[in-house]
Length: 75
Image (cartoon, rainbow, N blue to C red; front, side, top):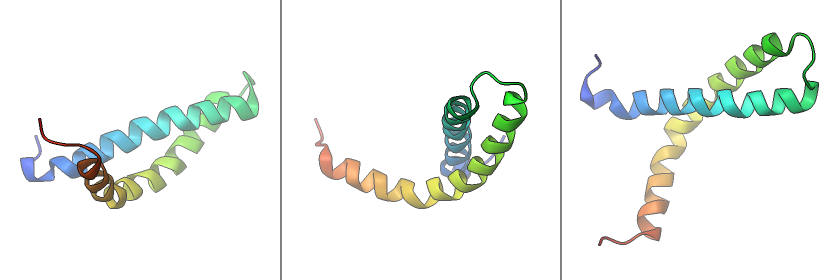
């Protein structure tokens, strides 16, 4: 288990991994179709996109939280 203070980083890691997996899968499938080698191409695209997505999520998440806080009100 990781310490609770690292929860935002762990959340960003998991979120960026899942989102980049889905988005890279859709875009690789659209680019290649159901061709041979799709899985390997998807894996390569996913690892590259995750390497970009993780630090971007860490930087952008606080800004997104502030925007959402301004768009919502307490009940």
